[in-house]
Structure formats: structure tokens, C-alpha cells
Length: 229
Image 1 (tube, rainbow, N blue to C red):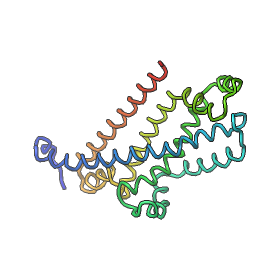
Image 2: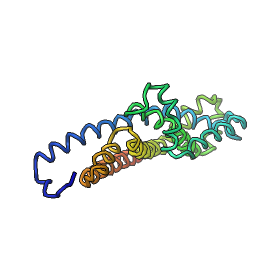
Image 3: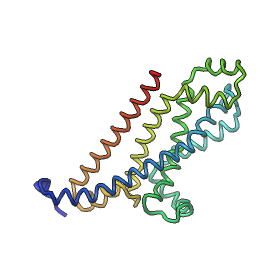
Image 4: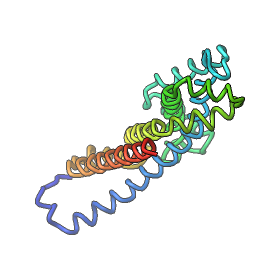
């Protein structure tokens, strides 16, 4: 379909375009929220375990630290597109299909969870060791140190990590659209690239940029408030 920029002044053009953009945006939002939530449900405990099992920490265990770190690094090193294709049998087993937004959430979670684990590990390692030693001297258990010392002390960094993770997931959803994952990425490929609709390409990119900017700004504001309090 050839596009003429004079069509931008046509109300019917915007009516048709918005009918394409709104569902695609909704699909992207659904994938991002669901995948980010489940990634943190998996990645947060993994990140905590990486920290507390490291040498010299509250629950040192070289075997867990080494094996878990290796597994996380393997999944982190796999490009998302390759991982998405490799996980097709597993995705079909979990959700019964390999096409669509729900199916895309499976590889999104498996790809993002190791990233979350490393982000959490980095945030928790910023907590001064003196604070942990003080808690130990007062008789705090390892579990109390985790949820009363480590996580509260690293709240600002964890929030920034959440923003960065969410932005990464947005990028993954755009790539998922290239292989039938739905959302704005699929719209950009099917209607923008394949049909030579430059306007659709520009609009989808603009929406993604605004979404990323909004999430990053919100994360920065919340992290700043945590530091102030």
C-alpha cells in the first residue's frame, strides 16, 4: 500500500490507524506487565540466593553459588530471538500454542528472569557489609537479614533495576512481534514493513519511545523518593 503524507489530515486515516494501534499497544502492555511480574517472581529469589550463598555472606555455599551463577549466565548469553525459537516445544507444552501474546510471555520470562537475578544481585551487593555484620551481632537470622536489612537498604537500586528490566522486556516484545508474538512489533512488521507503511513504522517507534521514557522517569522519581526517606 502506498502512503501519501497528505493522508495525515484525513480523519478516516486516523480512525483506521488508531484501530490498529490501540489493540497492538494493549497486547504489548499485557506482555510487558505479565512478563515483568513473573520475571521478578523468579529472578528476585534467585538474585537473593546468589548474594547470600556467595563466599563470606550469611549463607555461604560455593556449590550453589557456582552452579546457579553458571546457569544464569548461560540463559543470559542466549539472544532472545534464538531462545524464543529454541523454547517452542516448551512454550507449546505450557500454553498449548506458540503464536500470540500469551505464548510470547513464556520465552520473555525465561529470558528476563536471569537478567533480573543479576540486577538484584548487583543491588544487594551495594549494601555495606558493616550493616550486615551489625545485624548478625544483634542475633538476626539469615532470613531476617534478607527481608529486614538487604532488601530495605537496596530499595532505591531495586526500583531502578525494575525500570531497566521493564524497558528490556519492552525491547524483547518488539522482537517477539517478528515471529508472531503480537503487539507493536508485529504491527510494525506486518503493516509497516511488509506493506511499505512508513507512517505505521514511525508511530509504533514513537509509542515505544514514549513508553520507555515514561517508565525510566517513573523509576528515577520513585528511587529518588526512596533515598530521601
